[in-house]
Length: 132
Image 1 (spheres, rainbow, N blue to C red):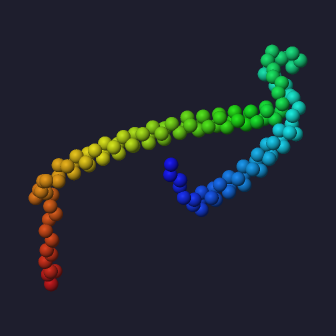
Image 2 (cartoon, one colour):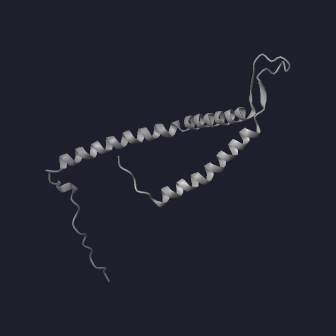
Image 3 (cartoon, helix red, strand yellow):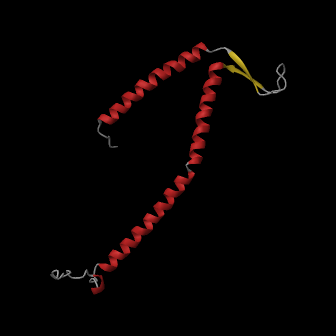
């Protein structure tokens, strides 16, 4: 297994990640500890006293779960939205491969053949001096 040498960019990226992720983790843990009380999540808009479906869970679990759900929904929406770009990239890659094949075939046919007269550039153009 080959290990990449450490570069300044790699080290800077790790430092920035640590500076952002460590305080974020501390805030999440503090939020979870401060919001341990149970809340009831009811999905029945018609009966507040006796809902048909409800779940009791800690508030922090509800908030963190909804954040995760939002990130997943946003990721799926972005992935679906970029489908046309992925299709275009695949199409262009196929075109590039076909053109590379054509170039290779043309090179193979022109290796031994001399250039025909019609494809050679014309001689230098001779201009007459202006008449006075």
